[in-house]
Length: 221
Image 1 (cartoon, rainbow, N blue to C red):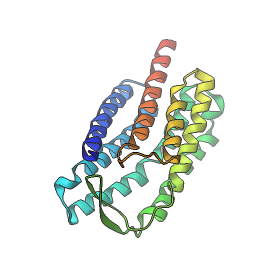
Image 2 (cartoon, rainbow, N blue to C red):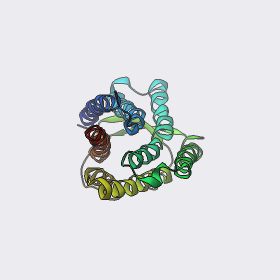
Image 3 (cartoon, rainbow, N blue to C red):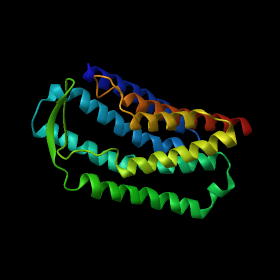
Image 4 (cartoon, rainbow, N blue to C red):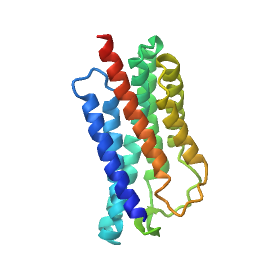
């Protein structure tokens, strides 16, 4: 069942990627541009998980799974820059300062480096069968979400609250909260893929937010 769910998520992310491209096209609102690599990474991630059992055990699948960790380390922190741009696009004065710009870029770079050193460098992978999905994951026991993910989630939540207050747009906040809830609770479902629905809903809310801000900007011009 899980391979089909991961395949469905792959298709869902492809749709979000197309929507994000259309949002970026002919637009001065660039927040959606930072979603493109994140969504591409999730297309790859879910696609590899969906097709792992078809590829089979061996060095090829192991290498493909190893790339998932590198992609996650480099692309997920870009959501910090997405958050910063949503604040700028909401015409918030303090978000336009050079100080916040520098902070956003330094935090993004710092999170990438931290993820590489804490999760990627020295990573040992072992094959794993779970609910019909064959993948290669860390041989070490995971003790909850990585620090990088927690910080990115906090940044998204903070930005979403400001956007809700400033522009009356609730769905950014809803997506951020759902993602945090999905990461925090243990859902009693016989599936490792089902919880990824929270991640897809987050990216849906982020893409919708970029689209909303683009339309709002167009109505003001």
